[in-house]
Length: 340
Image (cartoon, rainbow, N blue to C red; front, side, top):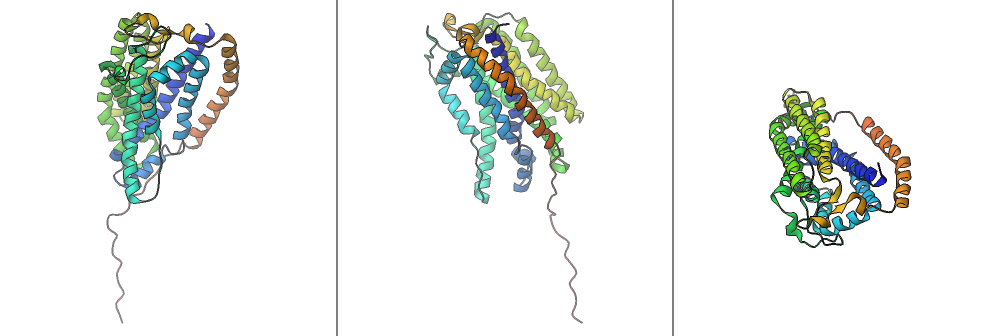
């Protein structure tokens, strides 16, 4: 296996890690107003991800950095052609919180909208890698924002939103307690089957697009697609049976499988050109020089285990459930002493 292929696989792993970890963050944001009924409850829901969501986004930074270092031509074309879409993602990822009831209400609504919008844009952008965008002979993007919008890419955005919503619901059933946990479980049961069907339909469509747009055989992408679909259907059954721990594991597997299906369908190209298929960027053609790949491979071999160990330790320390005690609706009046 050559170094360009190794780094193509590593970038797929980084995106899978981002989908698994940041996926439930987005899902929690989507369900913020569903599980939490007032400011205190919504604050408790956010406490489940508050210590880790910044760390989860590191996977996105590393994936972008790895793409820049290992595939500079891919990075340049993708980040120039998808500039407006990626800028929108950065706006949606921005978060700030201040005191004040009006600000908290506006911030909650903005958080929910961003938690839906960012996964949709990521799903749309990644689906465009396979569906194809206009490229010239030098690999430069020659289209416009409208070229990124198609039925398939929109389906990719909707599938990412559906997957993250279910992933977040199963996560909340593990991290919350009491009434909030019951609401999270009800949300997971309501989302399980519809979300599974949406994602499975998109994955099946991905296999078709791989054969029609990327000259791929159906068997390669069909294998992770089938495994991902099986994981989602099993997760739906487990959710309805109240086995939230195993269901969360399987929704995490499905999030990684979403990426595995797309990257398997994409190989041996990193960006498909349409309608001029000959202008597509390939793994070998878009890769950096051999020496640069050797250097970043050594750096990754040293620091990646340290980062993984630290993040695993963080989740181990913060594994306890987040509790919530509701405020009594009406306190019992105390008896008043009578004057003697």
